[in-house]
Image (tube, rainbow, N blue to C red; front, top):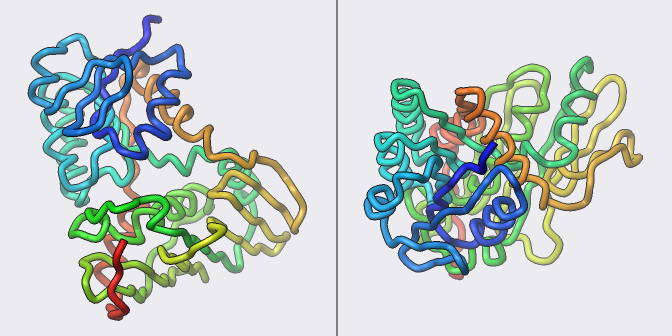
Length: 306
């Protein structure tokens, strides 16, 4: 089958670090062009806006959106209305209603819409899910602590409405949690820390049904922590390195100590969905975030500056 021609929209850090290498390393894909106000990719046709790209490149079959959440809906809607399949970087939108609208539009037009969760493609997530499938879970805890200055240097949009704050990385943990647990859980309470000069939280502590808790923080310097621990009546499971390394009862049990397999797996899945004429839009992780912002008790902390 001929390679699918894709337009990559939003040439920021995640696009350069993950999307471009994944596309260039796959025979299923051709990076036909980019759309960005500032960023470009060497050797690839660049457009400054969506409308120009959609008009000039009717041969592009797929649009992959790596924009921040707030402007993403307008770009996705335009792509779908022009007959292109659409792949959404996480989180899939600024609101749940936006994504429901895109889902309906894609279904109406017979197009593929893929709401991606890259952390679900981490090397140890599916082995962890298989191990937990027949287990009785007694407790689970997420520790997801990283340095916003390292991963979003100077990107003030993450602290603006719709930017999600610490839930930008935290939703990665929630995407794994909702994939590996054999039964769903729901949020019961939350405490959210907001810098006095910002609109979104920099830290969060969550409590779910089923004795599941989470600790998210965007202020951790030095080594970063992306761990999920699940205690069961048959032993303990630990996912480390963002879901890429698996331990059972403290012993290595699979995975690889790298995050570089996640985006190639996402693009392979997108190619499969298009070939099958299907969509994949699971909003469970985003529902947990919306619930946290609804239920969360607000705590004001020190100003934050990049």
